[in-house]
Length: 219
Image (cartoon, rainbow, N blue to C red):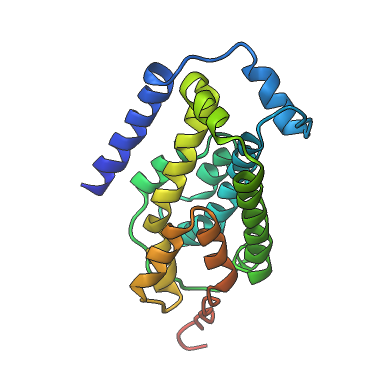
């Protein structure tokens, strides 16, 4: 049933983005280029913050999904890589294909050690807090609302942010279980602070215990 739900959300998201969302504006390609290159003059700070937040989300998901996919039949890394370009459009298929995985065995690779390091979570949290403050204090929210209603790029990017925010507990609960955490308030706290809460979780979560490599019988 969970798989059907995730596949249904994925197909619905695609259909909405390409059929029901507002049309593309002629200046969309120029806007994306300016946002990507830091030429932000004249762009609503709320749009700037949202665009950069969509660069943090894939790193947050990488820090939990690559651990989650360590012993899965379906590896997570192809979906995580593509998510840097298309966000939840890439991650929803992984959520549909994965199995619940509340445990971890075996030694950690260098990549997993990097992804679960607290300093990485702290850097992401600092970036998320800075972007949130920038949007709240400097953003032109009436203009953002108008753009949300008339620009497919802004509209779909906003919905992508919301999808990544609301889907995070799917991986969060298993990640907590792998670390011996069972406090239900943690999930609520993470959801209460979009993106910032997920980053703070990465900065504060305890490290997973490594399992020693099993010795061969009779060795």
